[in-house]
Image: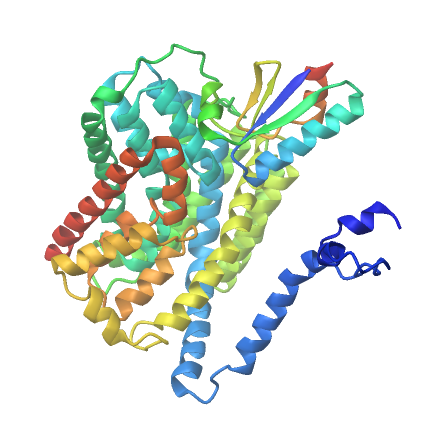
Length: 76
Length: 460
């Protein structure tokens, strides 16, 4: 599974990355978590607002820090 | 010996000399982790070692700096900043970004998209880290370069907190000029950029736009009423004593705490009706506020402080959106207060307060940016464009500069060019827009700021 955390590097984006990584570790699912900081690449996903989480090309959350429970739900 | 030793940096030079057959012991000192705190300590030591305590100018400046911080603490923190943080938090939580972005999409009406972009900064860009992704999104996926530039400029320039504090400290004329100037600027600069680079605009890929989902859905009239009540509370609480008695201004001043109490009550009622706040809690809060308000009316700050504490307890003891509201406001306060305190202290130290000099002689300031000449305005715009101002710190700095003899025109020029641009921010914009467009953008901002400064300085 391919997970991307989109965000230029504000504290909220780092928090999101941590939550996603925690969720992946907790679920035991094999997944790569990549942080995307390039603004044009972020815009390429059609995402208006950060932090955003993209899983296998599908935008799951925009503009907020997701809850760990939600992330677990998306990757299961 | 083991390989790890060979790999550490300190051993490399010794490795090169083959005669050395004994492997030296590796250093236990990890300079990487030491040099940063060490240089801070040494720097602090040198600072205090050479602290010019004998210089009357220096000690006077330190006292000025503390006096300025005290003035802010007494006059502005409780009545202006704290309510403004709650308003900004409410904007972040209650205003739906998706509803605004609808007008900035690929198929949006051009006139509408410019006007929405020019004011939406105040609503969408409450967090600086959302400005650039939104900008890139509007440019590449939405309404195009013009509206995107309008948004990029208006975002930091018409931030709610900044306008409130500017009007409060530098005066209502310059606050209003800043707000109006920022809106006009963003539209004009956006249009110019669109015309200059029209040929380069490529067709928009019609792609899905992913908007942040608002945490709360509420009809527009409810949100508007909520904001109207909060702004009313802020304005009545900070209503200044007019210079002459009589007339509308002093009539309002006489009843300002009654008005503030009325708005606070309305806010409480709205919170009970729409936000799951329990009525009995509101009644307890109101009793707690009205007792000191009636018992010691000559000290309104006591009742006001109790009111703030009561308001926070209402927010935090109710589940749901009030919690998000509190968290968003707290995020702003946490981020901005330390920067603002540092800004006030530095501004006081370097520039003093109005009527008292700081480290920098007032004659220099009035020589460079006094009066309202083309040179003074241009200088202020260029300095503003390159200098980095942490959120809101431009206000104490300008207060110091005006006190030291800066003209009102150059002050406005600096305000219009300053917060929207800085050298680090230009580099980031360049990575998105490219050198040519960035230069055009910066040039337009500087020219327009200079012209507006001259016009404003001519009239005020």
